[in-house]
Image (tube, rainbow, N blue to C red; front, side, top):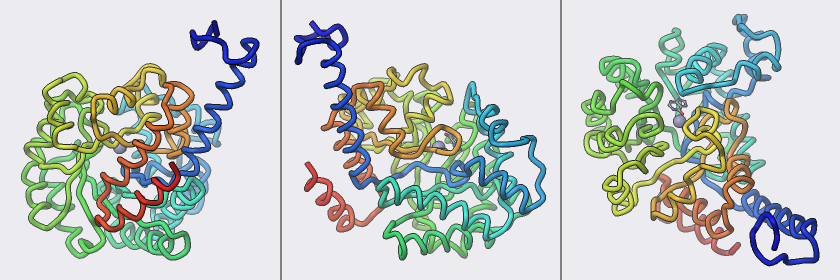
Length: 358
Ligand code: HPA
Ligand code: ZN
């Protein structure tokens, strides 16, 4: 018997058997690479790579507590969400001008091109900027011009999701929504992010209701560190179309049944989960369990510059550590498009392209 796979050895010795396994993994990675993908959970400020952070700090005369890229990488060791958020808000302080926001967004979109991410729905955190005196025109125009350029030059479609920082109060969220009114044509949805524990969704019921009246779709981070009750609140009080993360939903069977019955999308972020200690090891990532339960999960990068990779690296990590299968890769990629805010006809075009690769 093959000592690793616990079954009849396929070829003559265990080295051959391991080689076969490696080749299989390689082809699964190639499949994950070449499939067209949609990314639904990416914070644009979390795509700020260390090298760009240092460049922009220099360009704008911002002081950072890092001498070089090694020092930044050394600092990126997180025990929980808050450890990360502290550095994330510090990092975004280098973003000052419209050009900075354009460069940041353009760099992410070029990664999308390299990785066959053909559609993305991008979070941005206005309060992370307005609190430092950077106004809506600066980041809306900078991000917006990069998105238009990507549509024209790279053939990548996109939507914008404006997040409210949940560690700030309802009044600040309302002020943010008010400031966004002139830009509503370019914003598809509102979201809720930042420190989850102690900041339950119910605190934002009224501002989400107002967003709904304005015709905006709704998503919320819930069940990343917070309990299943926060996922219920996001569904019942914020009336969300998707749950971001949602991992802790698995603790509550009734909630899982509801999410399955309603086909609520969960935008899952494996490398983020590992780096923020939502899971102990990638081998323990629940993505396959989620699919087996019938949950509508898809794969995303969250904050790729902080968590060790973009969309494809997240698939590679799952392939290396969880035994993700070919069918599961297809399912996750299809779920991404089906859960997107694209029009039905656009979804169908992408799904046809994917199915042609089966
Ligand atoms: N969780 C909550 N807030 C965030 C995250 C996250 O993973 N990334 C950026 N803001
Ligand atoms: Zn997130």
